[in-house]
Length: 73
Image (cartoon, rainbow, N blue to C red; front, top):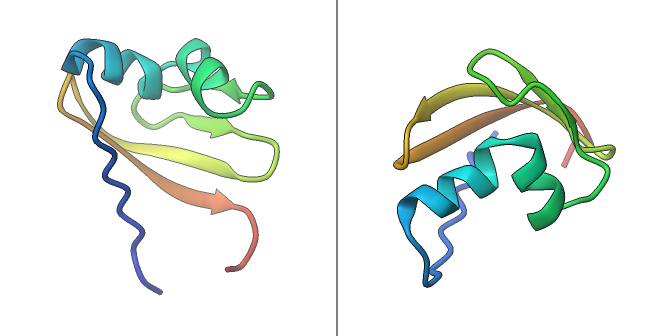
């Protein structure tokens, strides 16, 4: 299976972007409002349509998830 890499150019600081995609509060305002779970390393984020395990975090630099439940494609 192929990896999916999203690269999005925006005008913001690395700190603000990291907070938006590495916290439940940030994700629920940025991606889908029905977001819950644990966004810490090793935790699972529940998006309603899919669950993502947090496999790597580098503060203000990198967020990496692995899909553990969701559509096969």
